[in-house]
Image (cartoon, rainbow, N blue to C red; front, side):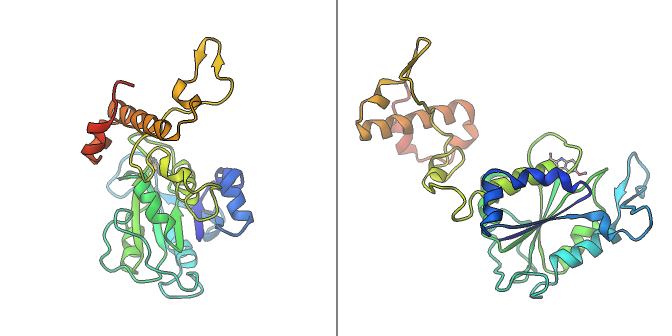
Length: 270
Ligand SMILES: COc1ccc2nc(C(=O)O)sc2c1
C-alpha cells in the first residue's frame, strides 16, 4: 500500500518512522512518502496561502499550489506513473463521500478537516483496503474548497474526515491518527491478527475487556479469580460479559448494533 502525505510541516509526520508503522515501512508493507507542499509553490517565498474571498479572519490555502502537488502525487486515474499498477477501487462505502464517478485504480484522497465526517474504525478498515491513499494536511483556515471538487471531478474518491469533535491547528495530527489506524490493519503489521478482533472497536463491535498480568495480587488489588482458573470457556464468557458491561456503560451508542441474545445471556452483574 502506498500512502502520500502532503504538509507544510513534514517533520510532524516523523512519528510514523517509529513502532509498528515504522516497521511496516521498513519491511515494504507500507510505502509511505511525506512531501513538503511548499515544493510546489512558485514564488521565492514559497507562498501557500492567501486572504479569503468574502472576508473573515485567517488565510486560506491556495488552490494552484495544491493542484500542482496533487497532480504529481495523486496521478491521473489509471496512469501508472501516478497510481500503483493494478490499483483497485477497493475502498468500501463509508470511507468515501459517494462512489459516483470514482474511477477504478484512482487514488483515494483523504482531507482531514474539522468539518468532516467523524473518522471511525470502519473508515480505517475501508482505507486499509485501498492501494493508494493521499492525505492532504491543511493549515490556516483550510484548503480552497475547489481542490477537493477538482479531485472528485478527476475521478478520485475524496473523503473529508475529522478525528473528533474538537479543533486542531492543522491536519497533521489527524493524519497521524488515521495512518496509524488503517496502517496497523494491513496484513503482516500486527503480530497476532486475532487481537484485531477483540480490541475496542474491532470486529466484535465492543469495547475491550479489562486486562491483567503478574503479580496476581498487587498492593491489595487482586486479579479476578476466573482469570487464574485455567477454565477457558469461563474465561471467554467473563471477558465477553466485561466487554458488554463496559460498552453499555461507556458507549451506549454502540450497544444498539449488538446481538440482543448476547445481551440477554450476559452476566451483567460482573
Ligand atoms: C486547517 O486544517 C485543519 C484544522 C483543524 C483540524 N481539526 C481536525 C480534526 O480532525 O479535529 S482536522 C483539521 C485540519
